[in-house]
Length: 322
Image (cartoon, rainbow, N blue to C red; front, side, top):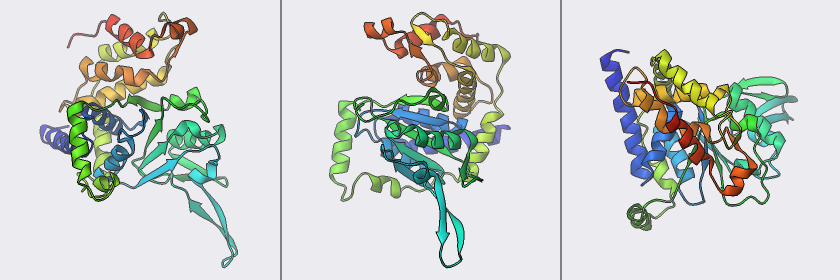
């Protein structure tokens, strides 16, 4: 990528970040991770208590790229056809016609994904991995670009189903959204108190900062960011270390290594570089790995978190010199 194209790409990405941060106040680290995953072409698992603007952030992201947005509230009685669509018999034409479900969009918010039964989760798993939906034996591609943002509540577990490891592994990142600071919360309260409508109006009024075609071009540019062999080896070693690190019963698989490198490429492009450095990967490593590991029972009883062990592991692995 030449210098002019790199400058233009960074300006577009900065405009996207600025717009998201203007609407979703006090979550700049989260918005940066969202945009990183967007450029890397991955899906994001979001965990946070209700009321932290998860839905608003997803709507703003879709509006900012000029894409179609869909939201699915996952419930125990949700069926695969409710997501993918189904064949409908038309009495006038005496033929079956396909009725596409909400999955046919650019940004899909899967709200409380862990409330859906296994069969419905399997239908979502197919589209996340294959970028296509099978209805009545016919494969239909979803629009490009396509991104799933799935939320789960870390507090309520009644009436939920545990997500299969295969599905968790399809998310490039698991992002944790915490409460805003007191200053930011005051700003949010004052700003929204003067709004005649609810929070969703903020997303609907946004003008796109890029088109979906421009986003596809940015994703292609992301894949062209070069990765030195030493940095790739270091990233792979981080993942491999999770498989025998004390306190980890199950480590991350090879898909985690790919995720680290793709996230590193996206972070490099966001910084205006066409090559990856360790600092592109290291800040996002925990988010890429936390949902791919399982702790031993004794560590869980001690109250240690996976993030704590991952930070120890990452700090113990010497990064290549820049």
